[in-house]
Length: 95
Image (cartoon, rainbow, N blue to C red; front, side, top):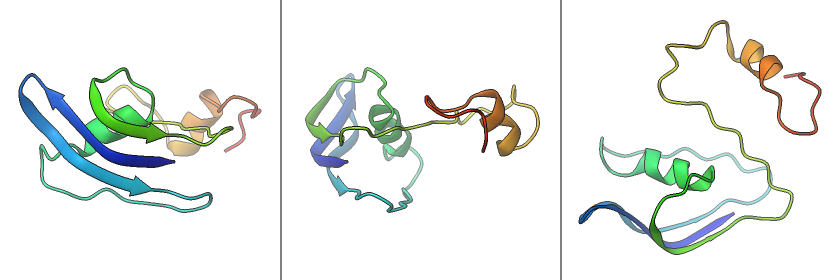
């Protein structure tokens, strides 16, 4: 997956600007930054939410992305329980 010069704006205010990021197969990443710096907006864009942005976002074929909401107040159990209830396409509910 690759982001090249990605900017996300809400109204006239930039959530993030000029983001460049490349993630190769098997890599794990973390996004770090101040509140309001656009971390969640970038993740929402990567997860397929329909956001207005400029720049390019390229995802590899066969890439599967799963997202958990920031607000987890309605979730019960642990992450393994969630994975069993909400398996990725092609999986049979095993974490």
